[in-house]
Image: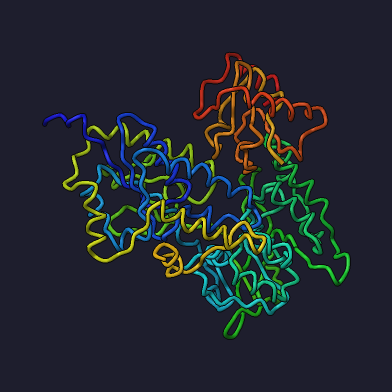
Length: 456
Length: 101
């Protein structure tokens, strides 16, 4: 074996340009020796769930893109957008051009409830609904019917709160956000007045964060409500509350104790926080007409309680059901998949098969650890994977082809790939279009329109 | 509503907050960490990460910790940014125990 020539920069491909991809790029670009990083993105525009996941009314959170802009300016960074790894270019082709490939393409599928009627019209996953209101080109044409006055949101995390908030906010409140124009139009005609946020666990176990929960106390024209019989804590839940060093639990409970049992008037919208209810069936002829719930009891030791159905059934008549119960990664042909966790099988970010590391293949973000954490969780997570990669790097074989090989073959095939400079042009155009509307930006939501900004 | 590091950090300076901060808004000196309120994007990720519950959303800031808002504002501007976790201060674990955490 001969030593690698030291003047040759290593080059790494990252698949996906959301937070975990950008933070992995940053960790690589800050390391010694110099490393070149190509970030592949299937859409012409970057930022993944920061652009297409974070709720439009959480504008401040989106300012994290300033950090990504700085990373994109670092020496050795390249964005290759509008290129789908697995379709336009294979993983094998990437491996022939790069020393290593990092998968940062998140959790692109949802977990299922596994109940009857889940696929009826009018039943959507949060992934679909959130991508729709955020202007994702692949979801903009979803046909969502807001003509029924009741909607059910299943889940007890912040995604459920985002979805409920968007359903309940008025047109005036949403019109100053970067919500997609067609979504604002559809929601302005919405008849939805009552939203039930439904979960199997109790108020102590719900995964809401206090900041998001508190927003419901100040939603204009909307009462946050709980049901007295569902808002009771058993002995184990009291114990969980007492023993916890996490102040969040008691803060959340205090906020929800401020919710009412009765709506203040018929004119108000209503947001019902429902606990200890397990969705057991979606009912309807051709589309969702009702959701059947089964009352649960929490059973077990503190912190290990599980919801057990009691047989007591009820139903909510509704026209829309949105399931916010978590995401899982998409399978990628040839790569190891952990079905239980819904992630690529990995050990500290190294992909593994039968306990052995697969050289040169890594994962970061949700595709590595599942759909949890805040944006910043991905920073430490990506740094950890990159540490493993850097320690492996001297042993990884020199790729057969040069860095330009992939781009040359994409260009030859006629594919219009995009650069970070291209994104900046789209960004400027979106902000410009937003200005006259009083929005931070007016998102461009079709692929041809994005490309036409570049080629005009 | 920026986030604020308060007195529990003094003498501990754990940096779990730094590893989850998406925007590198933490600064530090020989005693504790400070958040630059003009850089913080209010993601809230640092609150549960802190082993000594030192970080608050300013909305939730207890009366007796109010002074830290101005201290974070002022000190963060003078001090270097902390872009990766560092060792806690000697005695941090003892202080954590004293705090009953």
